[in-house]
Image (cartoon, rainbow, N blue to C red; front, side):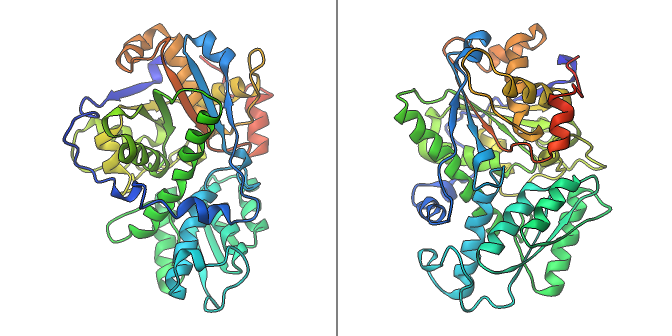
Length: 400
């Protein structure tokens, strides 16, 4: 299995002269995020779970997992970004400050407003949920190979949703063109030249995850993490959390490792090529990690990851499957976590790094050992229940 793990070490991650701006993730820039989300019905911080037995088995000081399957009953973290972005769109349309925008109901002045997005599932469901809260229309397009259960979940939120015969990046382009033609509000979680404002709002919404985790560690009297492993598709989640850490902590921040699916490792390939522009991965992007099956880096996330991430790792699907099984079948008194394919790949990678002699060089380069405190985000639960059972119950994609 280790032969399928590829990595790139970013030797300039902790230089004193960074170039990528992180002002969008400063205290002032994100001050309105959590209050807005806290006003939404059903908001509670998701649990931060401590896998102490597994940490001891792996030779780590601590291993903690933030379980995003509990987020607003939607089984994934994406609603944090979608809800905040939709709130900002509504505030702009209404000419009101964000704090004056109602969290539910149909505000006067938004009649006929329709949201649109392309998605593998979780983001589309989140946008549809946010649209339903405010009584707005919603159109969602999905790439080929999307799970029927994820499509059904989106439709259950009241959205018009269909699967297109194209890959994710093509679906994004098609949906953007359709939205422009019809005057819909595009709520896309990736950015390109000329479309940066909404993706940045979505990223700001994601910072609540790391803010909650920091509070929970303090409440549990546990030290701050030394390492974060963050999964990435277009890179918005990883860029948001890393941007927030850099804005708050600068050079004393923890190391951040960006983790991708091998079939869609656009960030890994971009980093390996140096400081040039991002690389696009074409083709079907066939991976079980549907949430990471994106071939084009987000223009707002890439510079942050390029300048500040400690490493980029390209992972086979079997690592995600192993992570799902380990989280669902814990050691000792560790809590069980129901984690989907995109949510579990980081745990699968940590286990592999700490146990595979072939990855000893990566382990040393990241300074992972008895003093390391690792924080992970299980970004989704069993959003495709049939696939989850195939992997965890029936052993699909066994470890090599």
